[in-house]
Every structure is written in structure tokens, then in C-alpha cells.
Amino acid sequence: MDFLAGRRIQPERLDVASDEEAAANLGDLRRINRWLGGHSVLRGCLRRWYRRGDGFRMLDIGAASGDTAGVVKKAFPGARVVSLDHMLRNLRLAPEPKLAADAFRLPFAEGSFDVVGCSLFLHHFEDEDVVRLLKEMGRVSRGHVLAIDLERRWLARQFLPATGWLLGWNEVTLHDGPVSVEAAFRAEELRRLGEAAGLQGVRVRAHYPWFRLSLRGRVRRLRRPCV
Image 1 (tube, rainbow, N blue to C red):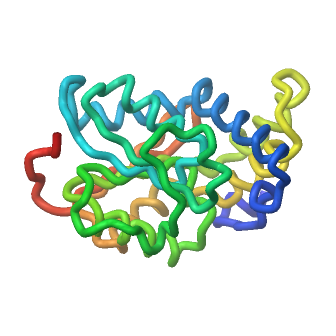
Image 2 (cartoon, rainbow, N blue to C red):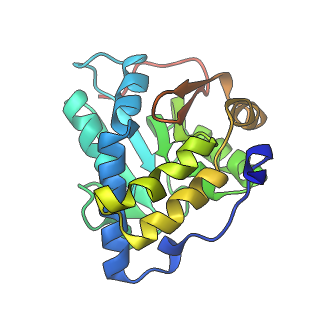
């Protein structure tokens, strides 16, 4: 259990999977987010800032199938969500608007969005690159940065292998899930990275029983949201 002492980043199979394997894995990720707290954590974080009738612009980085956009639009019908991923094939099921681009060099002007967020994305990167990503997210946000990720815990690492026989997880999922947990964060680690990126008022919260962390930060004094 050396991974509990510090993050351990290893290659994930999704990056080199066939189109068929990738589609099955992305389907598993949608199930995981729906059943295991990803969607509820996302809604809860956004409800700290917005009411149902508010209009705001959001950029979702590492969007994959775009289920974040669907959850946000259902909870906040006036929201406009752009889904961004580095691989076009991952975005096949994502709703419009969507684009493939480099998260380290986002193709948007400063302050283009009210919220810039990501889910299960930061753990793929070394700490210095996490800081770079959060800085870039802050650059294109006019107000909020939101990052939802995994908490590095032993029980979280064991969940997918222990339930594979029952829930039929894809082989890529069974490999990448434990790898992702080993690369994930403790709350204090994620808080320090957010502060190193220059975000203001950084708050990191653990969400149980889901073993999720949410980082919320501000970029500057909030302006009236875009509608």
C-alpha cells in the first residue's frame, strides 16, 4: 500500500485502447459517475454558486462522453456548457458544442466562461502539470474553477476489482480504475496545488461514501454571469 504515502502515476490503457475498448470504458465511466457520486457532487458544488434559473457559461475539460454537460443542463436549464477533450473519438456521444483541444493551451480568450471545471481529469498528471492546468483553467474563467477527482484511499482502490463479477466492468476499466486511485489526491495535497496555481479562496471537500474530492476556487471578483 505504498501508494497511500504519495501519488503514483502509471500509464492507463484507455490512452492506447481500440475504439471498441474505449467505447466500453467510457460507458463504464458514465455508469460510475451516475451511480457513485460524480453527478451528485457536481450538482452540489454548482448549487453553492447558482440557482436553478440562473444562466451561466461553463467549460468542461476532459469531458469524454459529455455526461457533465447533460447533468448541468438538466439541473440548470439556462446554462451553456462546452465539452472539451484531447481526443475527438472520446467526444462522439457528447452534446454540442464540443471540441478537441489541448487543455494546457485552451483556445479561448481570458475570462470566456463563468465556470471552468473538470472531473476525473487532474489525477492523470504530475503535480507541476496539475498546477499548470489549474492556472490555464483560471485564465479562461471569469469567476469559478471546479475540479472533482478521486480520493486516494485503500477502499476506493479495491472497489472496481471487487465488484467486477457483479457489475460487469470492462477490462480497461478494471485496469485503469485502481491505477487512477493510486494517482489520485488527498485533500490537503489538492488544496496546496490549487493555491500554487494562484486560485483564491481554495476549498477542498471530501465526499463520502464516494471517495471523491471537490476543489472550488475563485479567479477574481465575480462579475454578473453571462446569459
